[in-house]
Length: 273
Image (cartoon, rainbow, N blue to C red; front, side, top):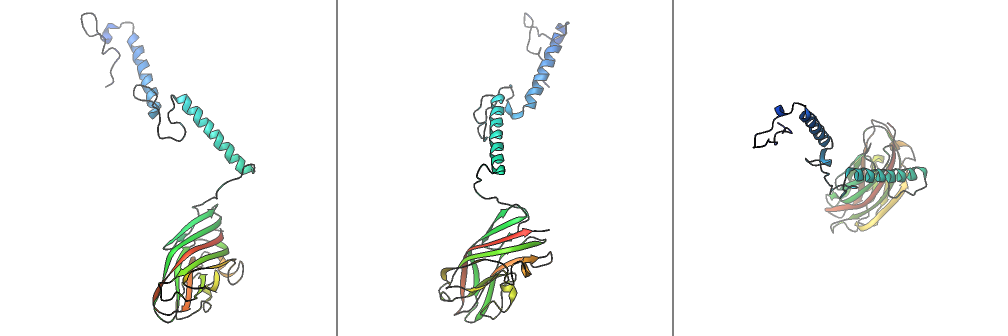
């Protein structure tokens, strides 16, 4: 129960002074004023303490160490104006924008040991995939095609424009001299083959290209359109078409080993539906 304004008042001699001693009703006015003050303090929330004193901030972006609410509002208004002017300058072209626009709408999923940075506006996309030791297991001394999932496009309809690859292969010592056929396809490469060309889906994004070695030399291809032709085949990707993207390699391997792929793959595409 809230303390009443007359609770701590006493008449001469120590007799408590009660509301009954106020035939003029002045204490009702005081009580109303205190109630109003309490409501104001409550409405200000953490801006003031229980006594109504301003509570200075220490962990905000723009109003730390201010002395009153008016100063807070002034600082916030100034910063809002600065931000608005900056945004307007970028929009009308008078101010050069720094950095790139990154996006989380209508994006896909990166594979194991792959990170994706999605640039664009949710419709136009440039997906930059960074591969770090994406592993391929070579079973033994034989012809073998191997693939690794590096990205999955989101569900829906999209138009794939171009791809770019800058990827180095590193063996574990057994196959370091191999020059595997290296490409990017919608289907993971498998089978006892030394090249990717036997199945177009093993290399429908980037055609197979002979790597210099499996000893850290990068294979750079692109930008290129779909292997079947720019804006054809896998590029015209309907809702029911394959959404996966694989880095594929094939060779006549010298023996069992692990090959790790490290580098960058870039995909440029557009969400249609």
